[in-house]
Length: 333
Image (cartoon, rainbow, N blue to C red; front, side):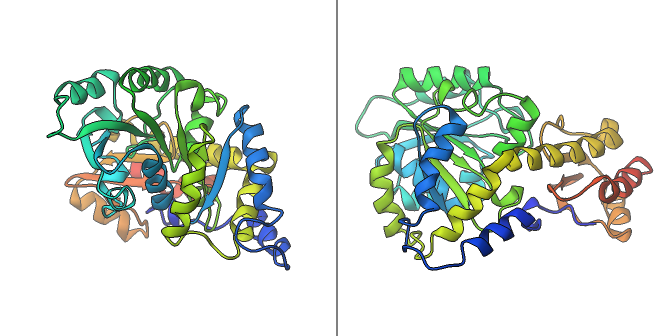
């Protein structure tokens, strides 16, 4: 009955089994046999050489990625509704030692090349102004919208021409890939992405995310930043084991697809109440305060998304039997 956030979902049994299997003496920090597999396994997934680091939280993954791409005196172009701007308590600015977030707009929290160009065009090439040095997008976005490979590539062209590092916040990357049916490579480095925050916690992990660098040289300084930020775990094998378990047999993609299908059920029930198309595992719908109260009286938990709106999030482990009562309640409003 809880549709508040996929952050609250259970850890997948395969993750718990992997944690138990890793519960033995091994090398500390990231010298263990699990951590040493990450570069190779992620390189295979993305069909190119990458460096992959385990990170405990998505906020740290985003912030460390941006610190690798943007100097303290630079700016990061992002959507005004981006998680790095709205929901990370200034962590990107903290980790970058002061880089400024340069805000743009776009429907469904998506940026267009024109929006990025407009931000750049409004800044003089002048030491008195913060110069854009990085671009960050979220896929799937904060409103459950998905960037296609072509859309990523179009933004990548702008980033290349403008000399911007290109970051993707992939807290729900699995949902985006599952919706599109494309390869992870097409949605990232082939479109110009330099660094990806690859989310696992929302998708069945317990306490591990991945920071993937498609320019491997960016990882070297990040190793020091990770330590300095207090994110070099002594027993890193427990994080690495989770990531490997989620990647095995495409469990990450299966879980993302399952959550997407559940959201599609709710989207169909919502009909013209939908505020945004359902492309991932989030559903935004119009409900009055009285209607929201009726749903809560039936035992459903969800997030109020401003006046007259609600956000419903489906987790990987909520099957049709768990979702159908809410779909029927929405249809009956």
